[in-house]
Amino acid sequence: MTTPNFAQPKTSYRSLYAFQKAEAIYDLTYFFLSGHVAKSDRTYDQMLQAARSGKQNIVEGRADAAASVEMEIKLYGVARGSLHELLNDYLDYMRTRNIPIWKPGENPRFNKLREVCNTHNDAAYYSRLAPRLNDEELCNLLVTLIHQTISMIGKLIELVKGDFLRKGGIKEQMLKARLAYRNGEK
Image (tube, rainbow, N blue to C red):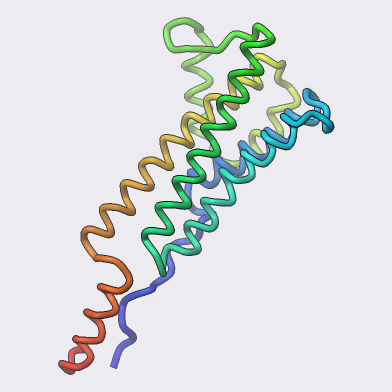
């Protein structure tokens, strides 16, 4: 008899582009804070924890995915919320220091930056790039990466919901496997 096909682990969180970008965001936020915000400032901890939460909740959501679709969606939602919080902190930083926020059609560098962020997911790439950027470039890089990652997490949640509709949750899968076992199906 074959092993029932339920509670199967999903691919590693490391293979998710949303995780890879979230890891880059965490590393870049650590770099940014080290040079721009005093450790004694409450904002330092808030931003670092929001960046960490954005990354770690993707990890935890993926780890819990085999046992609970509900928990997976909830944790991805927490990751997305944390990144929204971090995004707002960067926008506040930029607004209060009169750092331009690049927007499509307004800044010629915006499209190039968006393309760079679309193309690269590796945290090491951004870690090598960051020391060469000025405040405006670094902040806009982070804002762009955060927007992209929030979007990716939203798409990930939609994929999980679709998978749930097709396969059901763990209890439903377990019942189907048990009934198939009783009926002698393999």
